Amino acid sequence: MSGNKRPAGSALAGILTKKNREDDRAAAEQSASTSASATRSNPFLHNPGSPEHMLTTFLIQSWSEARRIVPRGKFPATEPFVEVEARIGIIRSPYGLHDMRIASSGPKRVQIKGRPAIANAFLISSGDDVVGGGTRPTFEGSITRSHFVHWTGGGLSEPSPISDAFGIIASASTSGSESAQIKKELVEVESVETVYGGYSDDNRVAFPGEHHVGDVITDPKKIGRMECKAKVTGMDIALPAAPYDVRVQLATEKILDKDVREPPRGWSTKRIKRRRSYTRRDKSFAWRMDVTEVTSAETGIVTAGTEVSYEIELELNASTTLKLVNEGDKGAAQKLCRDLAKQAWWMLKQINPAHDVLDVEEYLRKHPNEEATKLALAQCAAL
Image (cartoon, rainbow, N blue to C red; front, side):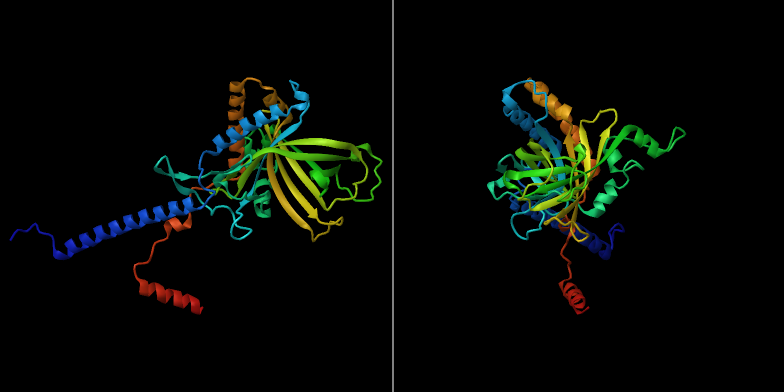
């Protein structure tokens, strides 16, 4: 008998190993198919794409809309009349539980041009159009206190997502401390503002500093203003791979009365905004970052029991906004929009970091021993 035959046990082990590999492959394919199917069943996850490209599209739309409504139709515009903002927050699904995020956490498996791919961002709405044509989701433009403190608490005192967002690489050296380097390149401005809202037509009254009803104003710097902020166009981008989504918006802001000594009757909310604003000292970044703690009350009394929320947003500076609006050449405007979108997305990635871990469902496998599974579940239920 030939001596090169494998023992029967070895042959059986090889067969089992091959069978296990085939089972694992089939399970993985089934899981990927299930995940892709779940993504397809979510009406809002039908338009995956590049966040930078989405931001570029939004800025081009903003350029077009702003030129359409330029005051008196006269160019060049010399005074800011629109604002371009990007805020991180949560896009809430209009279906299911009221506090449900529009998509579960993690990148999604999708089909792009018939080929499987991994998507980190989805266009949810652009202007008046909602992906899927369904009910418009709501946007909650605030973040948790823990994220706010972790991402922004360092300010200019140490390297943080703020310094990263502005492309500052600080390291201790003989030329100075990390903090000194950051302060050399970044400008921090602190401000406090009190806003009374709830008036008709989305009007609001804003006072510099902390204001209380009944205050007698003698300092001209404390005089308030009645203003109206109206949305022109916007875009919602879901970022399931990151802690928060993004809303970008073009809005007009008009001052209706610049000499308000007392908020008129009719307001229903009062918000005290404590804000820190950051810009590059060399003005190489066109965006300003605002990190804000907002204390809100439904009545005129703001106490320790009132609601406190936290916001992070980017705003295009006034000079760049005017430059964009006044650009009459379409090609030059599109190039400027691409550059601004690239810069904005870089900043948003640092302050709202994404991860590459897929949904937990991607890794779930059915246990081969059903009896052992039932026993384990029964034991857990008995605890």
